[in-house]
Every structure is written in structure tokens, then in C-alpha cells.
Length: 175
Image 1 (cartoon, rainbow, N blue to C red):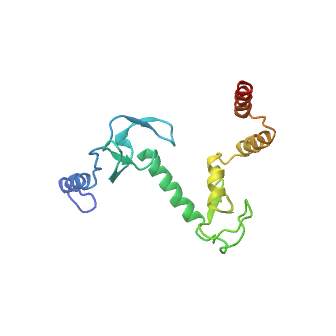
Image 2: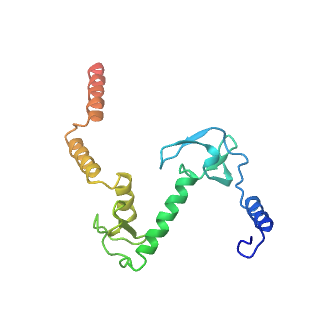
Image 3: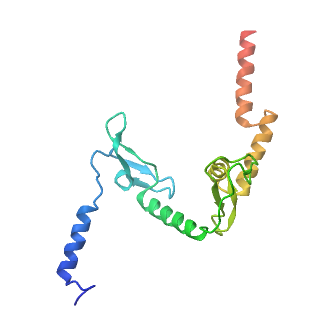
């Protein structure tokens, strides 16, 4: 039986050669495990990517990020799909205000979209897009952040209260 015009033995030779040429270099990576920052699973370090030339203080290769290879591939496919879906939506001119903070954007417009529905939400500056992403892109987390900032004006956050009581004790000791 032929597969794509090649006889089966030749087909397996090609697969073998591909595996040799595309093998990952796992030399000089640190031993142990790392928790993937995307899926949250504790995995062997061999399941992450490392720089070839950048080393840590103890001589091991430096990890590029804490996303496992599997999650990197999924995110890459998602980014490609987003780029295809929104390829006809052009960013605003530079110096146009950000849709979120209103500050003029001089470079790096960021396409903001809903991660649940995939719908386009607007064009943001990098700081706003990163901030929303770090807060989980949810209204609940944004409301909690606003409440936190409002409490901080009144020195009512638990961390502030604890710190203020320690400062008062220090002033009592000094006096």
C-alpha cells in the first residue's frame, strides 16, 4: 500500500529523520519540576522551553517562561485564530485616545476581545490591556480592585491596618 506516493518503509524513514532534526535540546536544563502558569499542573522541567545561550547564576539554561510546551502550542493557535478573525479591523491612528483610560497611544495598539465569546471589545493601550488581563478580564475582579483602592484612601485595607498598628506601637516606644 502506498501513502502519498511513498512506500511504507520510506515513509517511516522520513518520520525518523524528522524526529532527529526536530528534537529539542534538553542539555543543561535544571533538574526538577515547575508549575505551568496556564494549566496549573506541576510538570518536569523538560516540558518547558529554555534559552540556548542565557544561563542562570548556577550555570543552568534560563527558562523562557513558565508556560508548558502544551499550553504554548494552544495559546499560539489561539493567537493565530484571533489574528485571522480580526485581520480586517484596523487599529486607530496613533495619538488617538485609548478606549479604556483615554490617554493618547503613541505605539503598540492592543486588540481587546472577550475570551469567552471571542467578540471584539475595542482598542487599548498596552498598559490597559495588560492590566485587564492581569485582573482576569472579569467585572468582579475589577470591582474588587476598585473597592481595594477606595478602602486604601481610608486606610481600611487589612494590610494597612496591620502596618498602621505596628507604626503606632513604634511611636509609643519612642515617646
